[in-house]
Figure (spheres, helix red, strand yellow):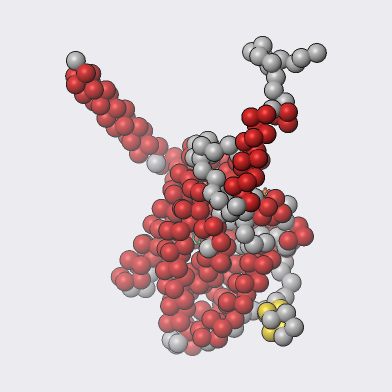
Length: 336
Ligand code: BYC
């Protein structure tokens, strides 16, 4: 018996739908040829969902990521440091907006993504659930957190989804500036007084392991990697990128005159890479469950900021409606 949809039309089994077979073959061909999928192209529903998940998490991370550094804007040690930090935090807001816009091309609105973040049902990066008690944390975030972000995000410039890949190009350029400013803060402190050097080392001690965990769980526990790599959303696995990051950090730490707090860190001649110590994955899972040091604080702050911004959204909507009405009236006059 032929099945029907609630509207009475014959139900289509996508597996046997010729046009959907053709669309799916076209999608596979674009991926195989290393091409770009664009918003109006046919794509598997699971590809769309994976992208919305990853891109919205990424956007949420940028927005929540403004908080740990925003904490130091009023207390930056000089006018120049303050101006630089403000510019960096503003860049992060911008990154969040590009990424929400890019994700909207997949059919999920920014309002829906924001609601999920505020409801606590969408993720943001684990790294932003750690506190920033000293000025040196601004250096450690720039050097380690933005450094990890660059290693993770440069390959995303070649992601198979066009709008995400294009958004990442500009984001990566700005992240490079962020990383250098963090390195420079740490270098200044490291070469300063004994107390300043100690402050820099303490910040690196606290941010090193969490920054390695930003790359996600070990490959064996990564539920999405295999599929995301087959779709060329991710180009490298979590462990491959983590290794690349550690290899990059060692000479930079030497240049800074600071020590990476990792007893397992040593050059492995055979592998041609640095070995590094076991990470505390129980801590990572606890942070993902919302039990990190700052999870509650970060969400409470974001909810309050969202409520405080309600009048701005209302004013922008009213202005847009007024402009649209004016445009309509103008068109009517010119058509008459
Ligand atoms: N934190 O299968 P897996 C920045 C979740 S912002 C929280 O490997 P996937 C910056 C994962 O979502 C940096 N959750 O996942 C801003 C999944 O759970 P669900 C943000 C994490 O997606 C301001 C589960 O664990 N960057 O740079 O294949 C100031 C299994 O993981 C994390 C991005 O978002 C984590 N660290 O790979 C300064 C980059 N790791 O969703 C700096 C884009 C994993 O099934 N995102 N999970 O419930 C990605 O590249 C990938 O999503 C990840 C994870 C590598 C993070």
